[in-house]
Amino acid sequence: MTAVFHDLAGVPRVAEDPIAQSEISALTRRFEQGQETTAREFGIVKSDLTAVRLQVGNLDQKVGGLDEKVSQLAEDMSAVNGRLDALAGEVRTGNAQILELLSQLVGKNPDAS
Image 1 (tube, rainbow, N blue to C red):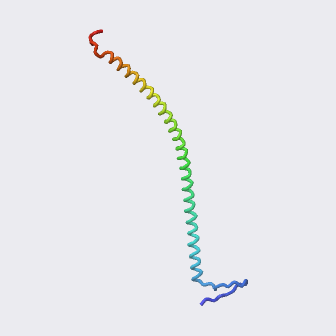
Image 2: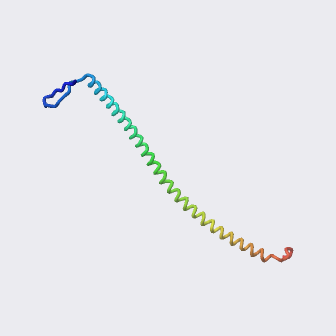
Image 3: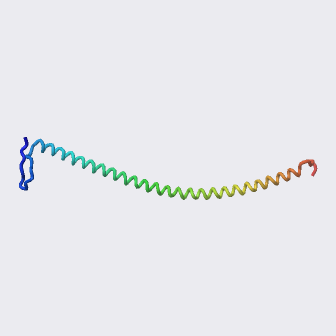
């Protein structure tokens, strides 16, 4: 049986129980240790998040640099394609001239000058 007392303000209070006080103290210590652990882990997570943000920033800069390099490469490839097209046209013209000359030589005596 628990005796109920009233303090000066009229609020009911329970007489102090040593076992209950011991349990409350133990729970308080565990709660405070949990808070310390949580604060420490939060600090670690916050630190890791800062490191990740820095890495993302570095990667973002590298991607920006790659964008410029890819654009330059695309321009260079376009110029190479233009040169190849021009050379292909010259080769076709040269081949046409060779075919024309060979056609003129068909049926002629190779020993005749």
